[in-house]
Length: 272
Length: 235
Image 1 (cartoon, each protein chain N blue to C red):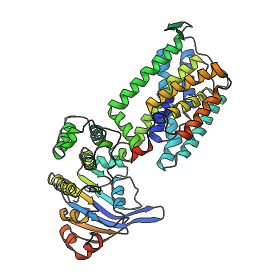
Image 2: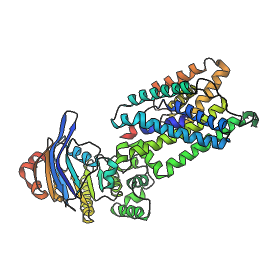
Image 3: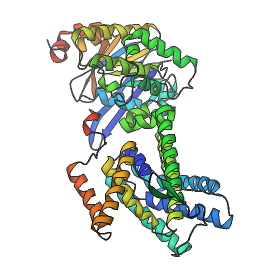
Image 4: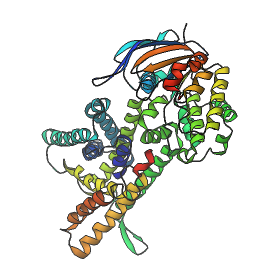
């Protein structure tokens, strides 16, 4: 989840609050494929990746691209993103309804013993899948021509277009990638918890993770997610699970005030 | 047919009329420079030709066809800009910067060939291939910026203040390089603060003041004009 956030932030420099809604829609797509067509996990994820990817690209085309062309400040984009999130959620309320849906059981309830700690098969699967996806993204970004163009765009959008890069297309690719990650996240979230219209708000956590790690940094997103997870678990266990979110948001504010670049974020001076 | 024909070019930034009816043309294999004081609109002309800044009036033809409006389409027509302050992708390595320069081309043997040609012009770049471009010295960065532009196989090269921040000796080498690039068939439009040196190597020059051309003529003649020397060339 944090990966999708970071990807869009690093290229367009704004926090895409609609990312959560895309995850939610991805989960619904996966759910439909799993229950209506009773497909296997692989196909469900593939379908959800494709669906969420397309939704993310449409989201950019309809809600952001005209703002982007007018060089609107990123605050406007953020407001538009929030609007999208609210709109998409309510659209689901109005059409599918507020019911909670469960995925069929893909991973039994087995628990694996891993060096003394017990991990459910589902968590293990999610972890491995996320790892593989991030590795794939890393290879894509560092090796392919399009990947280099994405990094060039992060560095200097205008110069990127002067190299002959069609910015509209490049940005569509970025949203497609972010959407694909949202699709994966949606399916795993849906399996672990349930599928419902506001499930995307978990991405607030992804946003916090991305801020801690450094918005716009992919390794940072990973590290931030890890740190946030550990902190939340410790707080729930030793302090109180009710206070968990208070701690998370305090952490967010502390980082925004004291170290807005995050742990592994790019320093502003690099642009000079 | 001119390589580039600019007819009554106008550019507005909000209410500011930055470029006011500028017309000129570049013939093939010519070096033309635009000289003028700070804020005269030199860079604006360059950014407008590259498609980053929108023109509010006038027409531009490239090799007899009208110039497209989007930057990536303009590059495809054979016009490349090396902007002021180089604007390299500082987080990317030297070789990645060059690959970006060749972005619109198919990655084939001809790209490798052109990279070799850049290394012939600037041998030092070959040693720096895997270094981040932000860590290069100013001179090396300028070499990379020019190479990056050459990688798109342009027919017209726009250079905006290439000598900015370079030591005098390097400026001289740079001017020689520009002459060498031209001798290989390039058409060059040069904007320079080092006006004397730029005019010396130019076939023709234009003096831009407050968004309008004040004077034009053969480069050497302008460089020798006492009035211009006094106003723009520091005596």
